[in-house]
Image (cartoon, rainbow, N blue to C red; front, top):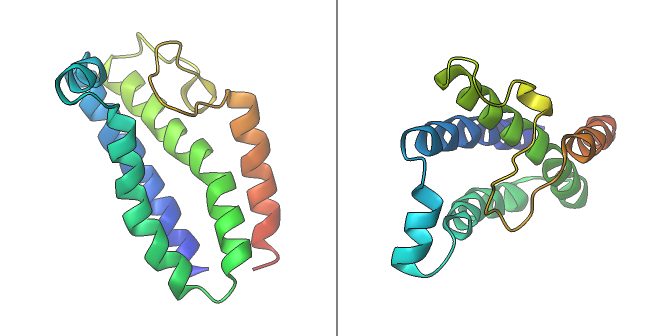
Length: 130
């Protein structure tokens, strides 16, 4: 269970930090792609993987942790990302906060608010198995 708390805390931190990054560097993803010839979200994914793998190794209930962590990540991460962007824009963008979606993302995988919520609820249900 402590591994899941660490993972969801990291999802929160990633969402906030990426929200700040993309707010102040509006064309960051495009500029990164043009300069380095690959999407910044690949770097974000590798950073997350560096944290995720040790947590998987440390936990006793590996399969349940993996599924729960993956199901819950997008809702937490994206929710804090959109909320951070909303705060920094003084309420001009992402007015639905946790339930908003981007129309300009370059992310490889981007789920709608509906699917993020559904997966989060499944993840919550799996916590009781932990």
